[in-house]
Image (cartoon, rainbow, N blue to C red; front, side, top):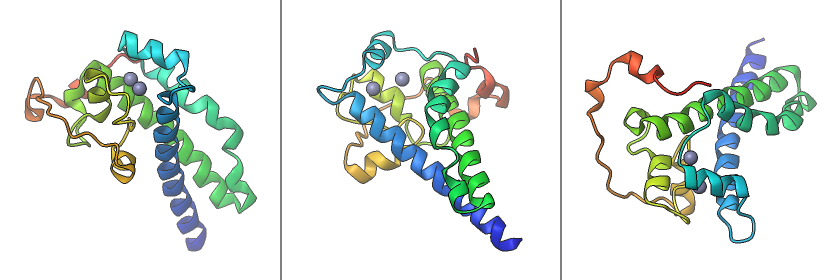
Length: 166
Ligand SMILES: [Zn+2]
Ligand SMILES: [Zn+2]
């Protein structure tokens, strides 16, 4: 039982880490010369999110064919992997939407890496959305200047829910 829980938890963390790696890789591919998706180019022109729900679908639907992989190992690993993928999509949808709606609220990063990717029209840097970890690993992190509109302590907890949800 304990061992099952450890496997579940380990695989869940692995799924989160792997998801952020895929996020980085796919976004980077979208900016590669011949692979730039039209949808992403549009996204850069518009500079807005689709609302949390639309973002969630974009992050979650493509993962569905891969969600069962963990069950090849065990039930605990299967649940951990699938749940990790689901949780990642929830978090990534929020991370993307909030950086378009109000980057000041990105409390878990030193700077809102995806907001800066748009604002500075970066084509070769800051591909991370949820985290900047992989940009730092692969040397694409651009620690450009950024001044928030308001300090974090001037925000209420309720402000963190004031994003476009649908
Ligand atoms: Zn981009
Ligand atoms: Zn964006």
